[in-house]
Length: 388
Figure (spheres, rainbow, N blue to C red):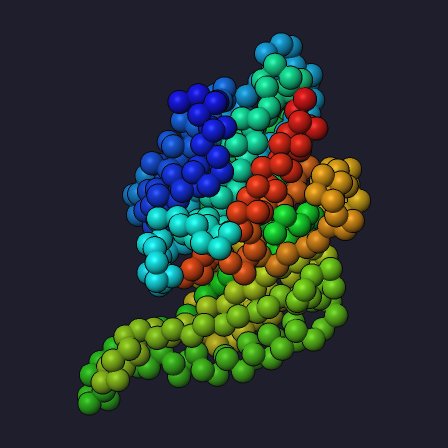
């Protein structure tokens, strides 16, 4: 395999090959990562592996790759691209004409799990890098490819903590493109995530004995103040940011009971709370109120963690440059998260990739072939601008 093979294979072939690797987040992504590494090595990249085992002992692999100039490099700058290889589950996959790991072309679209989010984008970046002669580079070209983005961005955390090349990217002030699906719109900010569980504990017993303690009776009174707090976050200006659509935290609550049998007293009852933080919104008051509710009703607090929002100035030079390359006038914000939440020590980030978030995670996930081709062209131009 060499650069000419990558070039001649074309974008559809590359995407089909990578989609064929089953890298659902609960499984290992090592095979998919090795395929990506083989492709990158064939076009002159050096690979740094950042491997780990997830909490269930499943092996996971991140890679950070670099292709350096053939001659002495400038001390600052460079181009970067960031992606993840894990994909969401396929239990509900149903197109009627293909399996989830068999990418199929129909009516100008590629259908398959990961075509949109975000193996298609990753293949575009690899093909774009193959178009650039290493001899023309004056600065390094980097690729960051993570695991477990879909389930908490754990791979990105390992990269941030352990990768030497990642630290070099930060020191060099590289411009990094996160290739998540934006329909090739230039994005300068996204929301974060915050989760907590409030749990009531009771005692199971057969309901006929009357000896159980139903945990719901402790949880239910707490739901009214929680709902009132949720309503306040939807209406109060201090919790809104009109740069986003919707401009609210989009608070969600899920109630869970165990066990579920009607003839067994509920031993645990919990409400899972999830919302999406935005830049400029002070969340300390919300957490203080949540803590007060927890204490008032004697509930257990289980922290599910926070991933911060990410935002850069819409007038930043690299944002304006991406707008020029894509033929757009104005950048946007999005309401979902990316590895940028964890990797924002790299200050010059921008999100731009083929496909729509509306097409991701669906039972018939797909990406437009025209947008894949557009992404190859835009990424090629961006890499040339910042690495050559």
